[in-house]
Image 1 (tube, rainbow, N blue to C red):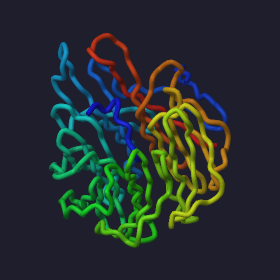
Image 2: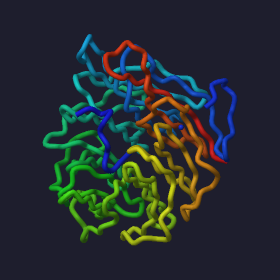
Image 3: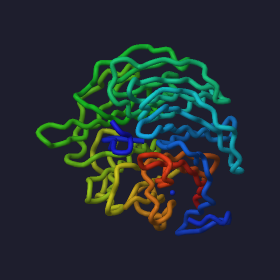
Image 4: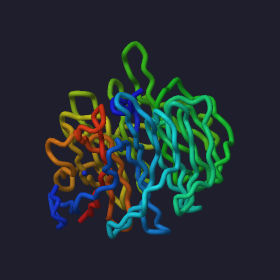
Length: 366
């Protein structure tokens, strides 16, 4: 499976002069080079440590021979709010590494990192990025979510559901609550439960369900169907209203958003975001509103919505016209400061296939 062409069913942004640029109401800063070498670098993920006030960026890089891959690595480096970066370090080596997940644990100031394919591996990283524990996740498909629940101090991954202690010790595998291949998990900040969004495909039709699961991964109540024949890409939870904002799409159609209650009932009308959608998006609840990002026609955009889902200003392009940008990740820093990291096509003629490099930009909300 090639990560360039994997569309995740459920998930999981230009001016280069160095001056601030204002577009709409979101303030963008200069483009920052994270990884741009003769290797192919792609699938970036980012998390923020409020303890150390810096971001950890992780990505996959590949070294190609004349016609085949020689090596895959997962690399990490810290990015500070002043744009300075730590030296890159390698936390995993192998072959055919294909996708990456990163979750920060604020209780213990550490990071849980997962690499999919050909074998699902995990690494528990300390506050300086050094490895605390390493292991494999057996009997798993494509893992699409890793989350940390502070009330139970455990990590939960999917698919299927695997529990880990905050020390990175496997606790057990939970029998899937549904016949799903990919999913999205969010911890409930008001209880020890999780919200699980997953898709089931039967007879060429896909239905997205919301299921509440206990901290041990077992189902609580019955799943509720949310959408049919659309792909859910990302979800944010508003704990003030106990409701979700869901970003979803259909190829060649539209990016849309939908608000639902914690029980899965629709709130208000469907929100039309953009046309010409691609498969990657992000949604973050920030104070009393949402920050979202999405792909449209090979560019990445960010946008701010209020708690009712109404746009606060225009969508802001983060990448250049004509530069194919696909996978990206967004993390919130202090206050209203965010960082987005993305991989961007680089036809440098060095690698035998289309190559990618990793970049970042800070952006501030008004």
